[in-house]
Length: 212
Image (cartoon, rainbow, N blue to C red; front, side, top):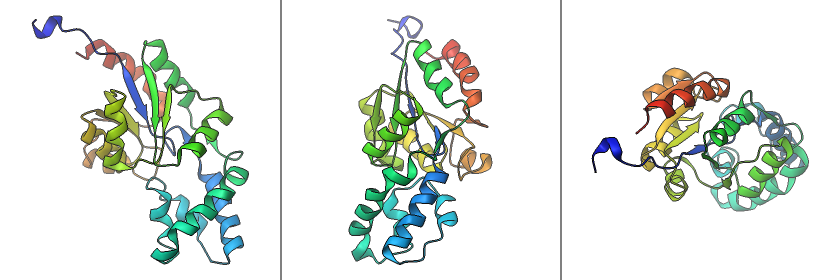
């Protein structure tokens, strides 16, 4: 069979969560402030939310000794539903990006470093309904889920997301809505950089027209 007649694989697009689909900064800031008050440790919540992307353990390591991290993660996560869900908003174009994948006959899966139950709470609260949600994966670790679901595209806002796409052999589509600017994303190897998800539908239409 020649390359021109090979069947097209089903379209599956992976999306990161924080600062790709949702602006979770207000909710995470509120959670850090409540957490700091509870444990009696000063945490710069504004600084913490300026570097979203890596797992919670990475951020807490800036504020606590290594031996305390497991306990502190559990304390923070116990507070999270009450403080983080309501204030967090969908980023422009988020719902439409999922819908664009569906209208193209594809599947949209969320692959995030956030723990899975909280990721699902955010999406449910905002009425965003992907086909699957996989939590607890960061950077190259995201390739595990991307390969499992056959994702040919991964959309994220962080250089770690670019690395995750590359590790999975997926096209990296980056959005400059998080802590990494366009230049950083391109330098990390992003195949495509969009200003935000409002540009995703147009990009997807072009991609579908030319993809093998």
